[in-house]
Length: 168
Picture 1 (cartoon, helix red, strand yellow):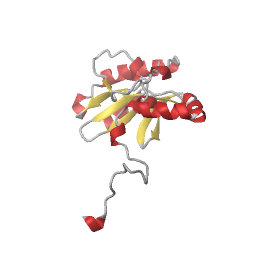
Picture 2 (cartoon, rainbow, N blue to C red; picture 1 turned 60 degrees about the vertical axis):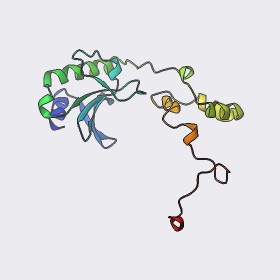
Picture 3 (cartoon, one colour; picture 1 turned 45 degrees about the horizontal axis):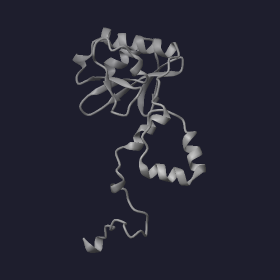
């Protein structure tokens, strides 16, 4: 992480601690963040989807991620300063130009039947749901939980049995 941090600071980015991790900004806007993991260290670009992957190294954060992309390193020897700088330069240019990621439109989301029926019954809740801000989050409505695995309401005949130390 020290090597990556040095490269980012050499690129004249401002540094702050956000979400407990070193975050790097230009003009007060998030550009990249260092993410330590057990098996690797990542340099995640907040608007990575808008970068040209000139070296074929950008990886997705996950199947529902629409904006962020990251570079992953398993050892300091894998870090090539010129390559990292090229991605950072692009990310800074994207941010300074004011480019926005075109998130999947709300109407494209597939909502679970369970949620759809609740929204149909409660217009006030439906109105609030439609007014929610966009972003990566809403795509998680369709996964990972399955309605068959959700806990039944308390007192329901279908409620899962509770663990009881006396019966263990």
